[in-house]
Amino acid sequence: MTLPQHTHSFHIPVMGLAYTIDSPIRVAQYGISSVISIIDDELLEKMNAFYSEKFSLPYQEISKKVDDYRAKRITAYLNLVDTIVKNKFVKFKDEVSESKSALENFISMLPNKSTIKVKLSTMLEEGMLFKETIKKYVDAHLSAGEIDVNIMTKIDKDNFIKSEQLPIEYNDAHASLRGFANSNLESSVVLSAGMNPRLYSYFENFKDFFPDTNSRLKKRIILKVSDFRSAIIQGKFLAKKGLWISEYRIESGLNCGGHAFATEGHLLGPILEEFKTKKSELIQDTHAVYIKALTDKDVFVPDQPLDIKITVQGGVGTAAEHDFLIDNYQVDSVGWGTPFLLVPEATSVDNDTRKLLADAKESDLYLSGISPLGVPFNAIKGTSNEFYKQNRIDNNKAGSSCPKKFLALSKEFGPEGICTASKKYQDVKLEELDAKKESMTSSRYKMSKNKITEKACLCVGLANASYLENDISIKGQQQGVVICPGPNLAYFDREVSLSEMIQHIYGGASVLSNAYRPNMFVKELKMYVEYLQNDIASFTDDLTAKHIKKWHAFKNNLLGGITYYKNLFEETLNPENATIHSDIKVYEATINTIKIPVL
Image (tube, rainbow, N blue to C red):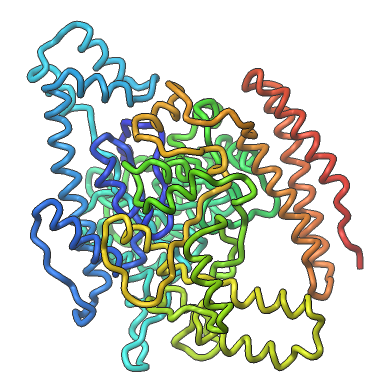
């Protein structure tokens, strides 16, 4: 099966719960692919009602009293998005076929290396009749952007009715998958945040993930990974179930938005190099396992290995970096996430939060401990969520009312789970801490208290921006907005139009300010050096040989990455090389000064 050829060489990754919740409706008609988070069924239900009214389409509320309401809400919203995108795409094709200015605008949005751009430009120059020749070509060669969905595999809470646990298929991530599988979409589900064997096994229940007699997959799987080893382990695991990974989406461990899953010092450049050199090995190894599984299941077995795409995202910010990733590592697409938070035509962000993002400097962006998952989380200073959360802390009412409970994953107090950002949880933990207060230093007490109370209600905070933007009422405790841009945001300082951002990506014009912006690989290296320094400096547990071994491996991997970059930038890029080399030497010297503790 040949995967769909896209109009653009970039995609918009999932951002939060709400920031790309309707991105396909906004940009798919232009051939731009984007990803919807399908964890929050309540948000999807509200957006279903909103867009049904906006486009005069029928809407039937799905209440929580309906059996399997969560999966049904997801299916209903995805079907609505599919309908709207298809209608908008037909109108868009008619527009570019009939209007010379519309066609010129569209051509200006296409990548310079695009064969579609070359052909349309030639037809325009030769003055061919629009309605006949252009329409025929557009119908044959243009496609709408993919309406992909994201499931964060860790968000798979057990669910209960009156203290009775429901079957596993009613777990949150399982229900999300079922909602996608039952939808009309022909697209992909992006699996992120690591392996969930139970969820992966559940895919086998849906025929759309298996090839038809034309070797075609109606629904595909994209796996977000941080290194090659993880890709081949998970790829084979799924292949043994007759499931094919159509795309490996490589993301920087630290130079990204949202949750940051740091590698053990493995840097993005060497990781991409390994994927480039071992792609055929990945295909052949997984194909051998895949065809055996399909044979055992007595379903259609393709003659040839199905296609695999390799894509990358995390920290890219210039046309030169975009082109370098495609040309040097032969990736199929580059993800541009954080910069699109400043594009109102593409993402759902309220005005106040968008202004906060535009004004942000490097010092405003930080890796926080606010996520109840216990995973470092990219955050920005000055959000409305920070304000409301601190008010509750100051009034001795720390914690959230926890209305949605998607992150109620701690089983510390019982099988039904509890969220570490909830008031119920924090009350208990603060009481336990106060009982030990007399035996602690004031600084130690303060640090321990902050560790408890800093957790934020992401379920509500990551959804509120979309409600605010669309004037949808917000009920319950005030949580404000949580937003999770990557560090790359610091170099983008104003709202821009969709056309401007696309021009920036393809090198037509830059939207960056004149302030210095480090190369994306250098920025990631800096973050990993700081991560190792902080990990050692903040370590308070009993030191073991395992910890020492981990830090040595981390340090050696960083030094290995630096050697790789020195060779890479000797051979490639351009005048920027001198600055990159200078920056790399600084961090190399810093790494060599890092003292790893000894037993």
